[in-house]
Amino acid sequence: MVGGFPRKEGMERKDVMSKNVSIYKSQASALEQHAAPNCKVLVVANPANTNALILKEFAPSIPAKNITCLTRLDHNRALGQISEKLNVQVSDVKNVIIWGNHSSSQYPDVNHATVKTPSAEKPVRELVKDDAWLNGEFITTVQQRGAAIIKARKLSSALSAASAACDHIRDWVLGTPEGTWVSMGVYSDGSYNAPAGVIYSFPVTCRNGEWTIVQ
Image (cartoon, rainbow, N blue to C red; front, top):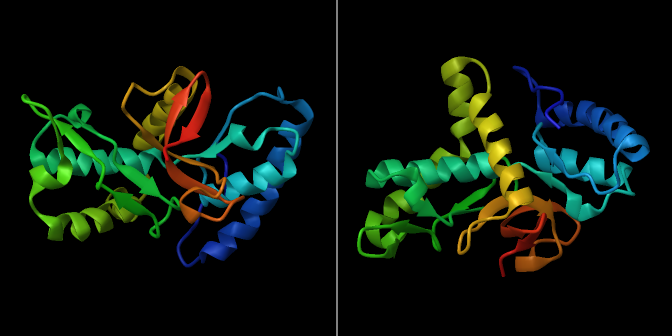
């Protein structure tokens, strides 16, 4: 679901919100009437968490576990920042976590992330050796990357979002590699004291087309 009302200059989030409520109500009713009951839905349009929740409310026959929102873009950006800092391949970094909302209030977490080195997998914190950067600039860069891209190209990120959507669906359908988790905005069951019933980004593993929150 990439369709949504884009936020324009001088608009508040709430202005976008009311327009998106009507868009997502109508998209939900179309899904409710015509989609296969076991379809998988990925909401990309912002505010992604809220749009996904609206969709879930107005398409009650689609299971809540089948409606997710995209936080893989933030997840990929976090992996990218670490790989750049350590001058390693991005594919050698794994298990960062994006907690919360796809917005500047998200929390990018490296406390469980590791990097593949010639000898063994090592914790990111141990290799970076710069807690001030990890607790400061790293977090704000990931949180505000979208705004920085808009500033640079006068448009939001298109290709990186599309690529992240492909990553999200591929892992959801085909499964995550053993020992690797990814970030997905999913319907909260109350894990980690996140309120049950909101769409929230957690670390998940996927198997047989189903996601499971990493406990």
